[in-house]
Length: 469
Image 1 (cartoon, rainbow, N blue to C red):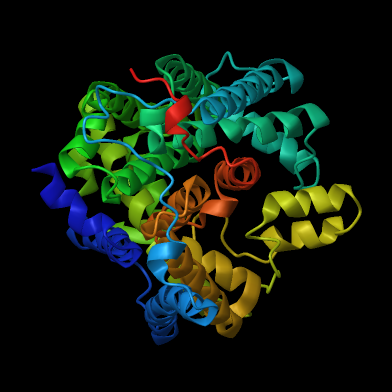
Image 2 (tube, rainbow, N blue to C red):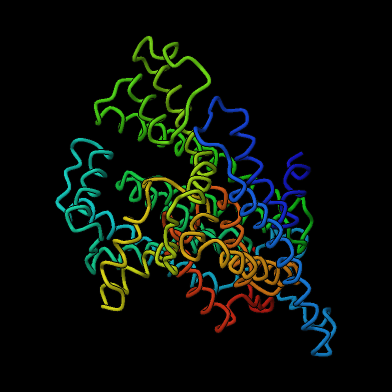
């Protein structure tokens, strides 16, 4: 049964953290891959130190909520804000929250407008030729950045497009968390808009933007299942009718990943043997199998095998990169947030608050580029070896604090923050969510939307004024 597999995982962020890291380590162990450099003691202490600090601070964050209640002299049962009154057969009887429904409708339109603006910018605003394929267009974008001194110089149109586009994943997040309170027409708009945004995002030839949005919605499903506002069977049945569509989207995304990789190799003029050699040289690894046995022909099966191998390397290479990073002499950085908050740093550069040399210095200080360092590695780049543990402690404390509030039912804003923090945890063995894909745009739109929802008390369901369906 699905609940027997999911429930043990979603009961605690700590379990999600261990599952995500265990998945990457297990993938590496069963993969025919061997990294050229062994693990240093410094790297092992850094990673295990993160787990120890995070677990302790997470528990302290949860206890802090209880301490606040004790200091204030209030019992938790009175602090708990039970804002919902949904009966067990809510699947057939909907309680519509019109204010939240209208707000979700509006921000989904804002996100759709942003996606349209982004498509216009990519297709017509930058003079990029898409006739050679998405990968060639992406190479042109990177070439433009290189010609500009290594600093993206987004125009107001493209900046606004990216800012607006971050609201659509937030609208989808709200739709999943409050599906039983939104009208069917709003849910359809969000779903269709999200598909259109994926199409717009694919124009850049990237994958992380789509992947992070999908994973954020998975975190929303995990949160919904772990709630106790209604029986578990009802919580699972809510998503049963979306199983077909979600499966199609997942299959399409995997196909898109394979297509992009094969297209990139073709555009760069590499045959199969050259592609395997490039993977080994770029990621400093060797294969434990005979490469020649998989390059006898250039057929679709051979290219699919190559794409699978690339995907495996893509999943596990961050483990090697953080090891190389901790071993790098002289140590890179610290960059004091410029690496992790690259988009805000670019804005600060435009406003004259940060020099261009500081921005360029981030990339020039790294011996390796185009790789992921795990979330720990990104924090290490910004704050150094020792101070990173303070960041780990703060993050764990906030996660524990927010998770406890979520369990006490403190409203939609807390649930939205929980979803993003869980996203960061799940992605931590790969990269830091806030500086990859649309991670910063989503977080910014989430904070703005959540603040408005909280101040306007949109998440309070007025049963007497609701329409039963």
